[in-house]
Amino acid sequence: MLAAIVGGRLQGVELACLARHAGWRTLLVDRKTDVPAQRLCDRFLQLDVRQASALDVALKTVDLVVPALEDQAALDGLVGWCRDRRVPLAFDSEAYALSSSKIDSDRLFASLGIPAPEPWPRCGFPVVAKPSCASGSDGVAILKCQSDADALFPQGFPEKGWVFQQYLDGPSFSLELIGRPGDYAPIQVTELFMDAVYDCKAVAAPCRLTAGQISEIENMSEKIAEAIRLKGLMDVEVILHEGRFKVLEIDARFPSQTPLCVYASTGCNMIEMLADLFLSGKPKPRRPDTTVRGSILEHIRVTPQAVIVEGEHIMAGAGPLDRVPGFFGADEAITSYRDGASAWVATLIVTGETRQRAAEKRNRLLASIQRRFNLEKIVDRGPGDTA
Image 1 (tube, rainbow, N blue to C red):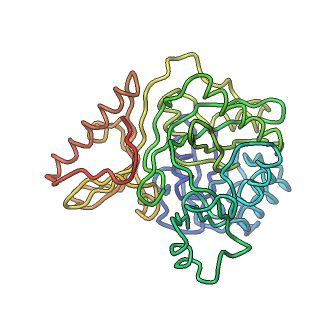
Image 2 (image 1 turned 180 degrees about the vertical axis):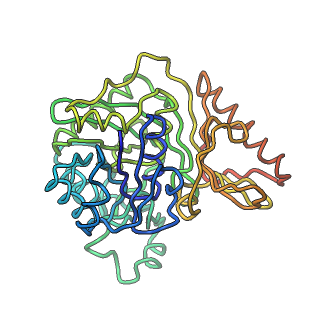
């Protein structure tokens, strides 16, 4: 199998690592050099996917194309090229268009009766302000009172381009499901942990929910997938607020962070499942007949003074990353570390027979890094823990 991964940032990193686990050969395409996934693939080509003639040469021998970018013009060009050349593309452009707009997604949730945060002004303060078409935590702000709102929006809340809704506290969870109308396979619910700027700093599995709560998340997710006629993969993020699940957002694209955590826990490889869907028409069964292990994926930044646990944003600007099995005792790491470096970042993946065992291993790993580099402290920013 030769897969073309289009986009070398964090989604591309995720896909490249999972493709390596699947035993695939990979071609990475990006219009920039020094992208995080550049060293993780078998071959790298710098080109703009909006140039059809360049794609004719670059992608003529691939078996599957998987987008790992959110540039709409580039996606449109890629979709058109694959359609015209009859090259399999693991992507649902219509579902993505809806999910990439928080305004359209919120309207969908309301029409389906899916619980979601109350919109402004019904909700009152505190308020979450989100750019409508941004990804993840980009541009998100928490406005605790009117003075916070006035400082960020001195002319008042804009009518277009932003979503303003109720701020909710509570544990957050994510679920990926894959399939086509009438045949969806929920994979595994994972638990998310955020840093001080509301960026995801860690993912843990299995989640600490009852079987009934997991079924509730799966049922809501399948209802949304059927409504948008999804063909492909979708990520659903929910929060448990005062005993009730509310959907925060959906993304009909390949995510980062959660797929590698799920693979470590269950053995389910989402890039293989996408290939099954788009090449043969059906996803694999929800999970293999193996025991679910505990797994934790976490991002760290190392300075000359400390190990700091932070959100995924620290990985995006670190330049080309390497995949290193056994890194200081981790099962696997994706890192910018080079011999002699005093400042570097890493995504660490650890597993154990249970999630508690994985947490204990994670603590030993961070302590090992602290000792190895003679650092003063370990700083775990933001709410929550992974134990």
